[in-house]
Image (cartoon, rainbow, N blue to C red; front, side, top):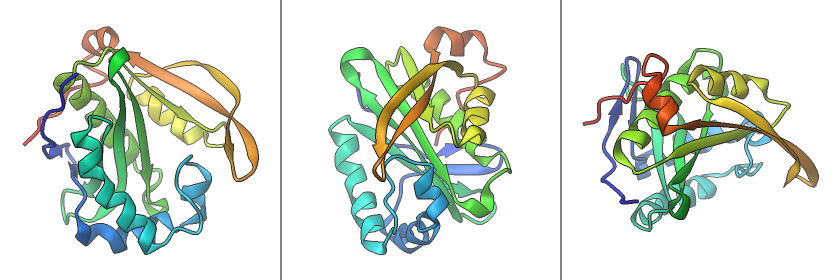
Amino acid sequence: MTSPAQPTISTPRLLLRPFRLADIDRVAALAADREIALNTLNIPHPYTRRHAEEWITSHAAQLERNESVTYAITLREDGLVIGAAGLIFDPPNDVAELGYWIGKSYWGLGYAAEASRALVGWGFAHYELHRIHASHFPRNPASGAVLRRIGMRHEGRLREHVKKWGEYLDLERYGILRTEFEAHDDVVQPPPSH
């Protein structure tokens, strides 16, 4: 699996671009919401500006080491950061894990599905991936709806698979194979990249 450059990915309403240091305050404000942390595995609460800075400055090295690629989800109309989406790579297996979060005031508007669909399409188009998978906590069924909307299939529940804030939690697992993606280009299209 080779690591291409990280271009901007364009969708009808969004631009996905690499994070910049100028995004630190915006990320800190969005991710400080307890519900964001509650529904993600790796976002702490409280979330501070220092967390945002450390996270953003880690992206370039992670991409260079072929570990992950992370995008700022921004609105096309004004460039405002509304969340993040990324792929974590498992090169020996030609697999990636999709992850995303959207600021609470932007929930329910289809942005998570639009950004995730674009990133899945880009991942299959530019990496030698066989499969992309994602998970969500059962208490967050909206995330499952996003994953189904982008063409992923529910593959099962991993019982008490992770520990978050001292509690063992189940994960609902979804996935899509390259062949499924290619067969259903009406569901998931590789987006243009710039």
